[in-house]
Image 1 (spheres, rainbow over the protein chains, first blue to last red):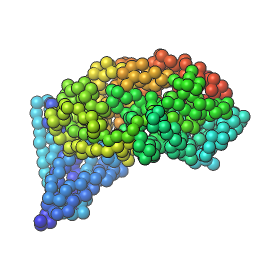
Image 2: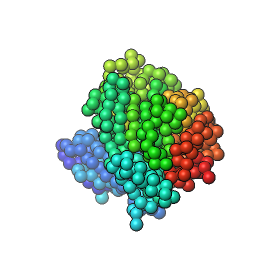
Image 3: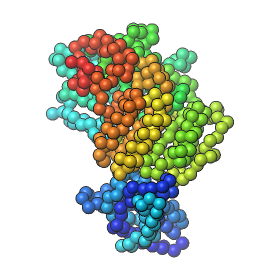
Length: 124
Length: 405
């Protein structure tokens, strides 16, 4: 497989939407990392989370198998520490093999409305 | 100067006057007698897994790490006698080598057998009491320096107190356990929506040897875990229905092994925990309120799972399953995050439904609130005054807990 992607990715604009409205888990508000690993090796992605008023927390370890994708809701991470909802953060991802990282946000703060926003993470 | 003690989760730290690691019962007796003469305190400590201040002292912390291992067993009688400092993991291996096993275990196995039974540590399963119910007898060094055997046969009037003693009656040196011939369990785990789990809860609890579930507050999903003997698996297979990917994807679904390797999980990530034992009939309403409050008030900071388990009723004086079939609710939080506001709010809910706190986890109750919850409270107090009349083991924290001056 070709080595598609980069080894370092950045998302500066994280903020998990809160509160959520609607049946869960379908309508849970979330920030999500979508990682594609097209290489023939497992990507042990390490994520560090940065805040406005505190030292970074990490690494969060997200292994992505060879020739696999993985979608991870940042809301669900607890190791090493849960990310608080509705708190600005940014994250820096490092992978030993090239990967592609997309960011997806689902926002259900407004009852009866669902907002989806997505972008590629910044490949540093 | 003595080194600082820090518990497993990191929230309990203090510097005792000293540490002691006796190698035999005579050495324990010497330490107790000396403390009594000097009017200092002794607190026996297990592995330091508890986060309530049961062991906090400016006196001596007495570790039984050097008094560990299986002393002997009697398979025909279903008994094994072990040193009190034996860690559960090593105990499981030692019993396994002898063809034996404890009937049930808790969610982790770092604790010593004395610490686990002294605090009412438990696993799950309608047919299983907490670990203290597996205690058939103890030997302890009392506050007067006397070595006493306590069981249904020896000093039986003390037995209901000694099986779960908070380390307040003496230093337990040996424990005789009810044990079983060893066997293998099959563990299954799968995720489902909380509504499906609550709808099927009674069926899941009654058809499986062990069943518990985690509720994930940030997705309203659950992870269900069941365990059954390989040779006695239920015909009903509810895991075929209701399955959906959980917050962390699908958990490892099936695992087979002996009890001591299958029931406990390895947990490296440190957390704080509050757990209350509820009368099982109060569980649905209580869990509904817990779920509502977490979603409305605490979801910003509360991402960890909420664990629900069951314990069979027993007749142990300070057991928090005393006299009633029990369902437990435990809230967990990263050690590095604030927990007190969240846990105090949960405690208020638990108390509304007649909950009793886990002795070794976070709670804010003292004797005034605890005494009405335990029908045999005064029996325990009488045993404590008899075995430790000079208060060698009675620290200020224990005095507050037990209502002693």
